Length: 492
Image (cartoon, rainbow, N blue to C red; front, side):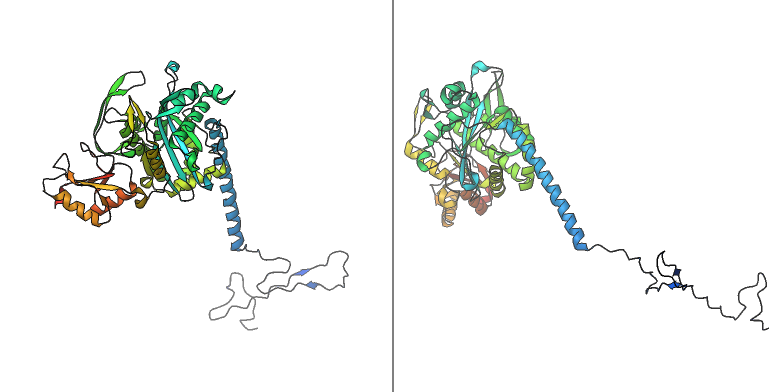
């Protein structure tokens, strides 16, 4: 027997030095016995192996197609989005039920913002619940025109001293209309009418009459009433607003809630204001006039619009319930804000306009020069009112604004205003005679939009690389729609 064939001793390696390992014995084939009932021939049944060693009957795990996974994820996201939208809408509807009231006017217009233009009367109310003997009156009247088709808006301020014919009273100031409707709500509009519904209805009818809207196929489609507390809450909910104060304001007789007075001051320049401060800025009038106050009120409304626009369309929608909740008890409106078409129309307009391009018009001596005063009442010429309303209902554009520009020299350089006037006229602007500013040490050129001509004033400010402000320059009698006060930068 050779060494290679002899049996291994215990502990001896399987193969010696130089030897190759013996090949392993083939794995026995797996066999099975047929189940009972099958014919059995005594032979074993051999199960053939598949390539790769997988016995038959054991299928490999299927991999899910990537497309099906994506579809399922997208469906889940759609379901979540629909659920979130439903929650949002239910919350908005719950809030609107506390704010929205009936429009009790006979044959009240149908609100359909997506079908064209819509006019909303904004009524700022001086309401003191702790002193009912004082009554209620409208401190502010502004009509907002919203055009969903063209995605533009404009504002028209009505001075509260404008004389009109108020139902049940006769010839009086327009700010008495809300108080009359409030006090005689059921007598004017039927049993069950609340004082606020009556006040809003009569204010809307009276404003329509003054502005002659029905003659133009227009109506005031809805009314929004807000008291002073609500105005401040609105601004605080937005986190404050940014206001560019054009001129210094000092009011030594600003009214306080306890029927006293206090001194308020505002210095010129850009500044952040909370709700209380912005309310004072919008209400003060002893430093100039009711017309200056109307201008400041529009400025604050545009600042609110700018703050809302900064949130974007989605942010505006998500913020709406929170904003409305903060105004509960301070705001009432006939605008059905929870109706889907109204919600869509407001969102469409709000996301498409720039606040600095919102049209600004107001009844004032500049826009309606043929007025007269009787005591403290303002009596407007109907033809002038028509022109103001036509401008209000026209989309803002340079051609529609037809603005005149006046240049005032705020430096000691002789003839500077005249030379700049010629340059500006060559650029296509309509000029008024040049003059001198009250001060001759103005450091930087400023463009003042006096009568609300946003498109023209913006282009002029870009041309001159100047700062743009609202209102008239301090100490200067405005002789045009836009006034340019030249500074030292223009003399270089």
